[in-house]
Amino acid sequence: MIDNKEATMPKPFLGIVAATLVSLAVPLPALANPVTEMNDTLDTLFGDHARYHAFFDTMKKSVAAGDKAAVAAMIEYPFQARIGGKSLKIRDAAHFIADYDQIITAKVKHALQTQTYETLFANWQGVMVGDGEIWFSGVGEADVIKITAIND
Image: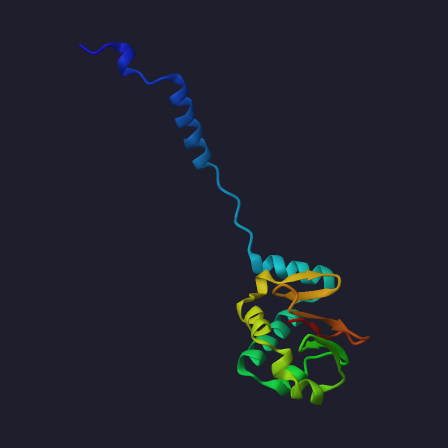
């Protein structure tokens, strides 16, 4: 003979089971899409995420291919670069190309290679790659997107 006390489940346990079943029946909110979030951030800051996304993709491909001329064309001149521990003003594309390997170091390449569009950091100053290795933003009255800083 089974004692009724042993055959019944404790009320607190039934409450936990019921709460678990109810929570599973409630639809979970959709997970946020990181690309959409970055698009929204860039739209809010700069008015047009598509140009920034295209610039980032082109910059990433150009650096990966070692296309010095293409990268040089993406720079806002003049700009300061650190070469051999010294700050040096790079005045134009010719100077940038001549010092390319000292400016686009392994650290800068790695930061860009591992960076994804959806994990970029953006604020009113521009868009940052890595831990500040590269910054880019719209410049001038035409708001042309250019690399504004490279830091090793």
